[in-house]
Image (cartoon, rainbow, N blue to C red; front, top):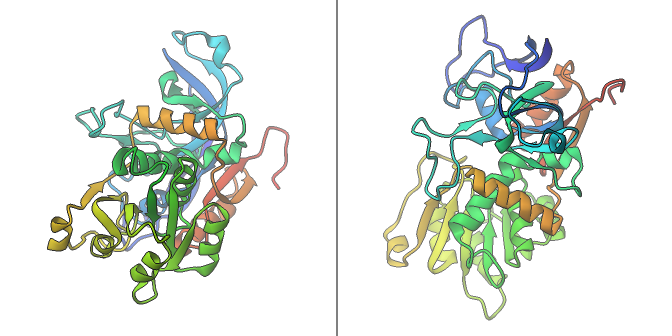
Amino acid sequence: MQKSIILSTVDGKPGKPGQVYYPIVQHSIPRPTPDANELLVKLTAASLNHRDVFLRQHLYPGVAFDCPLGADGVGIVTAVGPHVRDPQNWLGKRVILNPGIGWRDSPDGPEDPTGYKILGGTGFYRKGTLQELITIDESEVEAVPPHLTDAEAAALPMTGLTAWRALVSKVGEKRSGKGATLLITGIGGGVALIALRLAVARGADVYVTSSSEEKLQKAVELGAKGGVNYKEEGWEKKLLEKLPSEKKFFDGIIDGAGGDIIEKGTRLLRAGGVISVYGMTVAPKMPFPIQTVLKNIDVRGSTMGSRREFKEMIHFVKEHKIHPVVSRVLQTDLDDIAGINTLFDEIKEGKQFGKLVIEFARDGESKL
């Protein structure tokens, strides 16, 4: 048997969405054996996402109480299935897991008629990265870029994929590269920060928003040209004043909050600009004023990404030696429920600047 972290019901019954916060508990599950084209991966690090908190709040579809949590993971291949091509190429290799299945290369969305299935915590894909060992098809992993630590690699999958699609596939190649001027809202979260890293590496001038002056300053240190506090009245006007004289408006906006971003974005964007929305944490609906239509602004929803986009993102990170921003690494094992809970608390309270990572103690090592 192997250890895993799962959700537990409250008093034996599922709770009401948004009114419950499920405990996490350690659970023993069978040790997997790789089948056919599968790899057996000993996980060395995993990171948390807002999705994991939403699962604990029953705000995500398909919540399961017998499936390990976690969509982001990295590890070492320790065994291979009987039909794996070139087994010696895999054994001992550090690999990073594609966080979802059912979407190969279509630019529009998942090809699988049953939809895209994400690792961790649901009945749709009954595996997760908060477990010791995982089997995964050899086509669903990439070699870890050698410049990344295990913790950095574990911080990359879900946020990196989401940011790459929102930035490159949705804002567009030309609007997100050299000479482009972009706004990334809510800097401090994992997607926004890796989007900043990717956009700067692509040659774009990037500006950011946050409610924290400290986070704005950290973003500048990571390559942002400047930023404003979105809680200040008229922040969009102040942001436009920061642009160089030859640049009157932004080319694209990458947003994970929703709220009034379409209204504000219409004032910020050039005609034909793009708002790429990967989340709506403020509210599930946004007003769409006629001015947006008259200015030919495109509003494009973006969620996760395809296997092809995942490969492209990993290749770009390797080529440009990009380091994901890691807020904190907890070096421990799956016995440490109290320690892991502190990471969930930081997400709930919005304290982190970057990803929160669990780096598992190696065999024979003690917890730090």
